[in-house]
Image 1 (cartoon, one colour):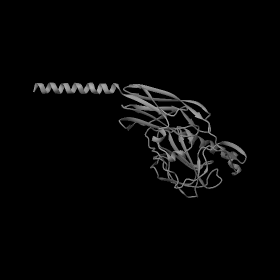
Image 2 (cartoon, helix red, strand yellow; image 1 turned 180 degrees about the horizontal axis):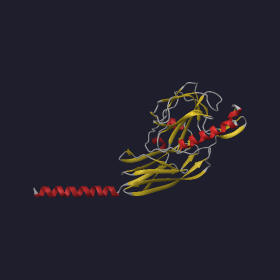
Image 3 (cartoon, helix red, strand yellow; image 1 turned 135 degrees about the horizontal axis):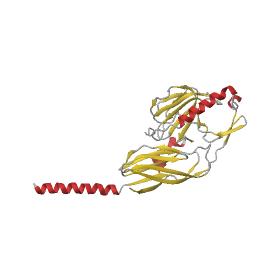
Length: 308
């Protein structure tokens, strides 16, 4: 009996030593691309073979909260980031990862070189009031701009986006690409911050990701609009809608019908404008339709943070 008790104590002590040894070999890694094109989405991740919490990535002046999920034999946090063609110049940009593990805060930093990508010019003819709006509309435009800016600052932690996204329309035929420099009635404007897809009036528009509706309305320039937050700074938006089938605060599922396409706002004809906003940056939404977060991470470089 005494020998059996002694054996149990030895097994218990060995178990503690084994767990202690394993925890001392815990490690974490970050994954991000070292070079990427302006206007294009890219993937980042934090991985570890031990639990961690409060992961945050800071990119282009914005801190993005990430989710912690089970991944393989450990934990992982996924993120989608990018740069807006309208306000990004070629060059080197810092990226910072932070998280807490074992009661300590860890940081890992790096640099991503953003390369110039040539986007063509596009000349369009629209109603003169859509280039130089009447004075009576200026207050409305300012108020709408404030509401949109507030919506784009939304930051939730739980990841509800999965890749590839649901195409917003059954058929994807582009009529105007992301990044095109718009020239309205001979007046140059900034680059196109989304993709225009051919769609007859009344075509069903589906949510690319599950999420929460954070803004709807009929805006001066964008016409009928819907913005959906899917977590980790991932927001999708649709413009020029004729009909909106959701309201602010609604939870939507991936593939759910949220609106019908139309020709409201500043348009030359019926179509759907589709925008993808990542951490406040408008990026090209089309390439993501044919890839996944796993495939995107393969294009990145993995670096060990340190032994924890």
